[in-house]
Image (cartoon, rainbow, N blue to C red; front, side):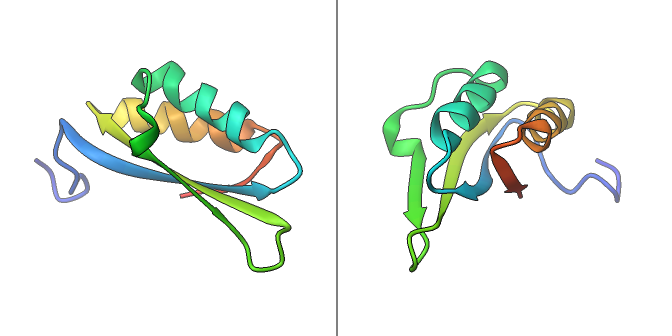
Length: 87
C-alpha cells in the first residue's frame, strides 16, 4: 500500500450524497451507486433531511473493491445534475 492510498480493499466504504429534497436524488444516485457496486440492501442506505426540509443527504455503505471503482462512482455522481455534493 502506498502513502497516497490509505484505503484498503476490499472494505465497506460510506459514500455521502447531498442534493435538493424535491429532486429525484435518491433514485438517480442509488442507480449510479448500484451500477458500480451492486444492489444495496435498505439497511446500507441512510437518509437525512435538512432542518428546513430543502435538502436531502444520503449515505450509501458500499463494499468497495478498488480505488478505480470508487473513482468511477464519484465521477458519475458529480456529473449528475441532481447531486450538489458527493463525499
